[in-house]
Image 1: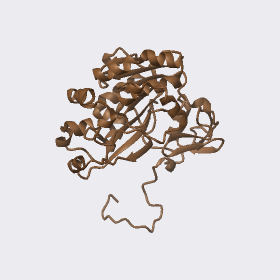
Image 2: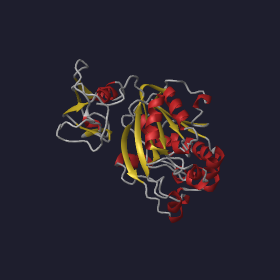
Image 3: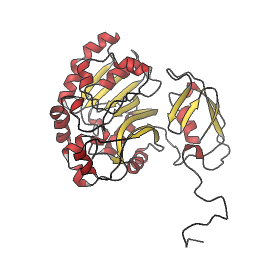
Image 4: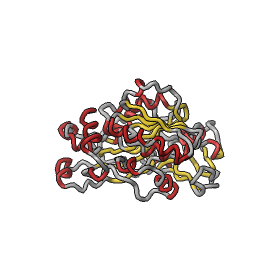
Length: 348
């Protein structure tokens, strides 16, 4: 599988126009400050980019970032502008042709930015332990439409967890499916290279994330993928594909479900480029200055990460009020005793 992917991204594809589907495509609606940073990137680096959007979490100044599957280095060079001279970015990729492009323009970008804080290493993202990267040393790990290409996704997540600092996060975009992919499609080199047949069924991803320690995966944004290629559409049949961005925090002891302790936060509006509100995930767009009720896990994600100084925290852990339904979970039982279940039988 490694050889197929290296062949596809190193020799078959010569530019983003050679992709046969839109599974990996640039987000045209990105904010102005990202477009400005993107304009500073060398043309060849941009041309050899195959990601899905631009992965850029908030509050990056001074951070140490690892990019899994960095390709031609586009995201590394963009984020190096936001971490600044005190931060650093390490890109990992297995494809020689992509690494050659990335390394060829180190000097160009160092001169453009006034400092050099990017490096690239050759390796496999499921074997990060072989790259002499220090455990608990990265603030953020990103990846852009790459993990679906890995034959061992659990190893990728496990290695990422070990490299993150406590309170750090993995923030990444990838392709997911609404059901498990048949092996016959997984074995198709074009479908795999196009980021489709290697996609994880979303529920399998959630279970893998929890298994390695990322207890509460948070979906930030998503969109359905329209393949727009009749031949490939026929092959995949009724399988639905989605491009999605998740954030996974390395915080020990997060609960499996969102629990209500009567807690709340107030966003100060102080995160750069986010004066009006702060987007934690799809269920939490937190307005500046408003008392915003949160579950225990959300409270800890904000309180035990790089975002803590940007919030006021209200409440403690003294009293539990049951499940917190503001995160997409709810009480599984009917509150109305008159409402009858459609099923018969049971345990009582």
